[in-house]
Length: 118
Image (cartoon, rainbow, N blue to C red; front, side, top):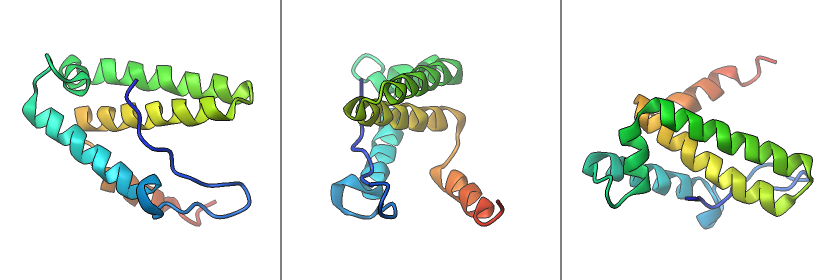
């Protein structure tokens, strides 16, 4: 499936989402590409456009499938599988957001709102 570069971290240091191609810049690029495919709407050439054309229900189904695959890989303690399936999950989550008109900044604002609440 389509994938994005995974955000690099280890359990011994804080998440560093700004480091090169493996950081949030890659996610920004992915979001921009999804928005381009949405605007173009050519589902004959683009998997992303086909998903968007199928609507939020299909996009949600794909998110569920990919989340389950991440969970299975984690339960089997397969690091590489978690990395690859997480990339697929991020991609499909972004496509779902695009299909619903959700902007990444809205999700980030919600994360910021929750910071320090628990």
